[in-house]
Structures are given as C-alpha cells and as structure tokens.
Amino acid sequence: MTLVATSVGLLTYFLYKKMKYRSPPGPWSIPLIGHWKCPTPVVVLNNLEVVIEALVKKSADFSSRPRFFTGELFSQNGKGIVFGPYSATWKFHKKVAGKALKYYMHGEKLENMINDVCERIFERMSKEQDPFSVTDYIDKLVIHMLFNMCFARKCDLDDPDVERLLKIDTEVVETFGNGLLEDLVPAMTYVYKTQRCKRVESLLFEALSFLKKELNQHEETFDPNNIRDYTDSLLFAREEAEDKPEEASKLTEVYLVQILNDIFFAGLDTTKMTLDWFICFMIANPDFQEKCFEEIQKAIGKKRHPKATDRPNLCFTEACIMETMRMGSVVGIGVPHATICDTNVGGYDVQKDTMVFINHWALHNDSSYWKDVEKFDPYRYLTKEGKMDMKPENWMPFSAGRRVCLGEPVARTELLLIASNLLQNFRFKAPPGVTHVPGMRCPTQGTELPAFYKVVVERRTQS
Image 1 (cartoon, one colour):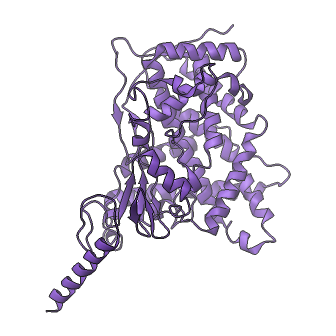
Image 2: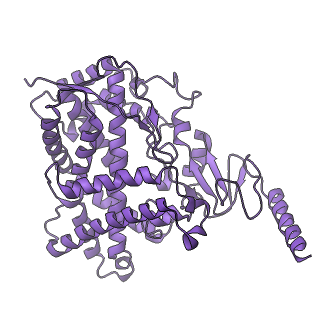
Image 3: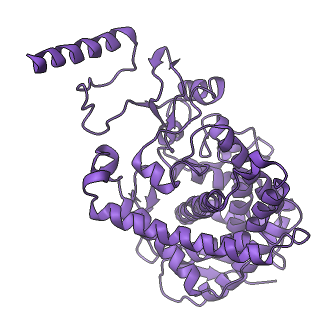
C-alpha cells in the first residue's frame, strides 16, 4: 500500500507540474527517471528569435550554468569562468580576466608573438614536399602562441612541455567523446567510475598541475612594474586586491589556476579548429584564396608581417574567416546555460534550474535567414564597396549576452593575423586527384571538425 500511495502521489505531482507549466514541445519524461538521455530538464533553442529573447532580452534569467559532473570536473567545482555559476564571484573573475586580456590588445604584443611563431613554423612547413597534414602545424602554431601569451615562454618547436600539453588536450577531446556516463547517472561517481572518466580525470589533473607550476614560478619572479604575460596580469590583479579582503578571497591560487585553464585550453581548441576549417575552405575555393592573397599583397606586401592596424584593409580575408566560422561551426552546441528562476521563452514556460542549450549550428544553417546556406560566400559580410558590413544577427560563434565569450576581441584579431600570415606565405592545394572538401567528424559532443585531410603547399615567392 505504501508503494502504491507513493506512486500515486508522484504521478499526481508530475501531472500537476505538467498542467501548471506550458513546457516547450518534447517527449514526456518518466517521474524520477526523466528522459533516457538526461536526468534534468533540457531545452534547446534553435532559432534567432528565441535565442535573442533568452540571451539578450532575458539575459539574467538564462545567465547561469547547470551543475553536472563534467562541468564540475572541468572547473574544480564551479570555480572557473566557462562552467562557473552566475554569481558575484563569477562576475568579478570575468572582469579580472577581461582586463588581463586587454593587455594584449594594446601596442604590438599580440602581433609580435604571432608573427614570431609563424616564422618558425613556416620555415619547417615549407620543407614539406609530399602531401601532409597541415593540422599538425596549426596545432603547434596555436599552442606556441598561447604559451608565449600566457607564460612568456618562447619554446623550441618540439619542447616536451608544449608537446605534452597538446597531447593532453587532444586526448581529453577524444576520450571525452560524446560525454561521460557519469553525467547521465551521477550516482556512479560515488559507486564506480568508468575507465573513460578516470582517464579524463587523470589528464585534467596533469594539465592543472602544470598550470599551477607555471603560476608558482611566476609568483617567485613577479614584478608589478614588468608585466610579462597573462599570468603576470592575473597576479597583478591579486596584488591590487590585497587591501580588499572580499576581492582577495576570490583570487586564491585555485581560482587563478582555473582562470588560466579557461583561457589557455578554450583558446587552444577553438582557434586551432577554426584555422583547420579555414584551410579546408580555402582549398575548396581557390579563387577566394587568391583574392585574399591579392588583398594581403596590396595592403601589406610580402616583406613585412600583418599587423592589427591592417585590419580595415583586410576585409575580404576577415569575411572568409567569418564564413568559415559559420559553415565550420566548431562549437555546434554551446556550453549549456541554466535558468536562475522560473521564466519563459518563445511563449513557453521554462522552470528554474533547466539546462538550456543554444544550437549554434542551427543558427548558422538556417535557410530562412542565409541565402544559399550550403554555399561558402564571404560576400555575406561585406558592403557593396567591399568593406565590413554590420555583423549578421544569426552569426553567433561567440554566443551573446552575459555569457558571451570574453576572448572574442582577441580571438578575432589573432585569427585574422594568423590566416593572413598563412595566405601571405603559402598557396594551399588539395593533393593530386582529390577534388572534394573533407567531410565532418565530431570527436566530442557539440564539436565539429573537418575529417582528416592532407594538403600540398607552394611557398609564395618573396619580392
């Protein structure tokens, strides 16, 4: 009788909630169990109207992050910016991280780092005679740039520390795959963890240990009058907060390591993946590749490197990067949001603590918004005069609202500088007999990469 009464009570409560809330359309879930794929309520936003309503018009309601095993694992229980819950601490960390990033947007710091790494990578890449994987060089280029930016370390191209971190990042992505079973069955974390989960935990521990070591070494040589890199910028923020106990408590070692973790690895993955797609689309559209080169030659020539100040004269190249980010949506489904209160979107009720995904792939492939959606067309972003037009509303690789990617200004500048360097120095072609664009592979949930491919390069003559 007790079991029957409990079952009836649960069913009554379940039906009451269904009647009380006008939930978005979707399959019914089983009380206590939920859907087969997720134990918590999930809403996916697939078109511009509801995305703008949630992320911009009601940004506060949708500003947090859900608590789930993977998010807690990657952020040391919510201490980071990417997976951290919306709070005063999170807002303070985002402000500190953003201020540190702006350090690289002044003067020539960022471009000098990029140009130096490009020179060394290109010298090696130009020696390739047979078709080869350009992805390997892009990965090296991006991680060495980040090493310099975060740790002021100009390392040998085969430096073991750099190679190990790159391997860790690659293995985490491949091992994580489409998620961990522990996210679907949280109780497993207390009973028995899968081997995949244990491996991801081990890799993350190694990565965080490395970042902690770098932070400690910076602490020993820190000089507030000589800010060398991003890590020093974070230490400077901590020093400024020494006489403010409330702020100082939010900049302990574990918090600083987590901010470094977010900037370093998020910047590594998204940048290298975008450049990978960029080369693919340039190979598939040789006329556009030549038009980029002609623009670069006219604006810069061949005897100097691209600079951030060249950006207004590299509109077509930037448009090609933007179209790459639309068609090669490296983050098809963004990091999940969570509602902090009962709210609504698109005319439907969304309860507090609902997990909300933004379908960036759907936004970037909406045929009702984009003309010839399957066509690579950089002219979408240009005026008739060939200048950059207003950013299309449906173009949202960096998300929007309170959770917009804080690294967007740096990311867009570094992508343009690296892409311009690549096309200034090389012509990229498919190997003989290859006539199609590589297909897509999804090594991890929500991530889309080109299938493994090889290229042939011709070094542009210097004049």
